Image (cartoon, rainbow, N blue to C red; front, side):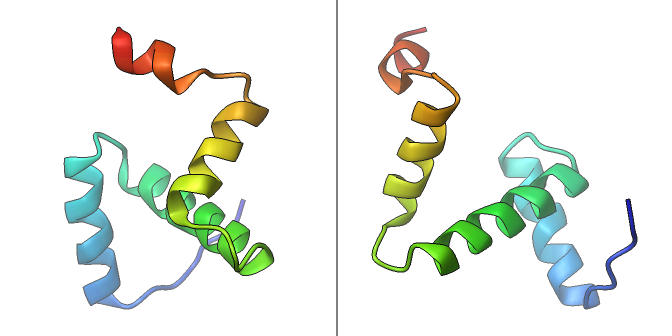
Length: 68
Protein backbone atom coordinates (compact mmCIF):
# COMPACT_ATOMS: atom_id res chain seq x y z
CA UNK A 1 0.00 0.00 0.00
CA UNK A 2 1.25 3.47 -0.76
CA UNK A 3 0.45 7.07 -0.11
CA UNK A 4 -1.25 9.17 -2.75
CA UNK A 5 -0.85 12.93 -2.52
CA UNK A 6 -3.98 14.82 -3.47
CA UNK A 7 -5.01 18.44 -3.45
CA UNK A 8 -6.68 19.69 -0.23
CA UNK A 9 -9.86 20.64 -2.10
CA UNK A 10 -10.16 17.15 -3.60
CA UNK A 11 -9.62 15.64 -0.15
CA UNK A 12 -12.47 17.77 1.18
CA UNK A 13 -14.70 16.62 -1.71
CA UNK A 14 -13.85 13.00 -0.89
CA UNK A 15 -14.55 13.58 2.81
CA UNK A 16 -17.96 15.09 2.06
CA UNK A 17 -18.90 12.36 -0.42
CA UNK A 18 -17.75 9.65 2.00
CA UNK A 19 -20.18 10.96 4.61
CA UNK A 20 -23.09 10.87 2.19
CA UNK A 21 -22.16 7.43 0.84
CA UNK A 22 -21.45 5.93 4.30
CA UNK A 23 -17.88 5.02 3.32
CA UNK A 24 -14.56 5.82 4.88
CA UNK A 25 -12.54 8.52 3.14
CA UNK A 26 -10.16 5.84 1.84
CA UNK A 27 -13.04 3.66 0.61
CA UNK A 28 -14.61 6.63 -1.20
CA UNK A 29 -11.31 7.51 -2.88
CA UNK A 30 -10.78 3.87 -3.87
CA UNK A 31 -14.32 3.72 -5.32
CA UNK A 32 -13.75 6.84 -7.41
CA UNK A 33 -10.39 5.52 -8.60
CA UNK A 34 -11.87 2.16 -9.60
CA UNK A 35 -14.85 3.72 -11.39
CA UNK A 36 -12.53 6.16 -13.15
CA UNK A 37 -10.27 3.35 -14.34
CA UNK A 38 -13.26 1.36 -15.59
CA UNK A 39 -14.69 4.44 -17.32
CA UNK A 40 -11.39 5.08 -19.12
CA UNK A 41 -11.20 1.44 -20.18
CA UNK A 42 -14.86 1.45 -21.31
CA UNK A 43 -15.61 4.96 -22.58
CA UNK A 44 -18.94 4.04 -24.14
CA UNK A 45 -20.45 2.79 -20.87
CA UNK A 46 -22.44 4.99 -18.51
CA UNK A 47 -21.73 5.09 -14.79
CA UNK A 48 -24.86 3.01 -14.19
CA UNK A 49 -23.77 0.37 -16.70
CA UNK A 50 -20.32 0.18 -15.12
CA UNK A 51 -21.87 -0.34 -11.68
CA UNK A 52 -24.40 -2.85 -13.06
CA UNK A 53 -21.56 -4.90 -14.61
CA UNK A 54 -19.53 -4.78 -11.41
CA UNK A 55 -22.53 -6.00 -9.41
CA UNK A 56 -23.09 -8.82 -11.92
CA UNK A 57 -19.41 -9.79 -11.70
CA UNK A 58 -19.81 -9.97 -7.93
CA UNK A 59 -22.94 -12.08 -8.46
CA UNK A 60 -25.07 -9.46 -6.73
CA UNK A 61 -28.60 -8.93 -7.94
CA UNK A 62 -29.45 -5.25 -7.45
CA UNK A 63 -33.17 -6.09 -7.41
CA UNK A 64 -32.56 -8.29 -4.35
CA UNK A 65 -30.59 -5.51 -2.65
CA UNK A 66 -33.21 -2.86 -3.42
CA UNK A 67 -36.03 -5.06 -2.09
CA UNK A 68 -34.30 -5.61 1.26
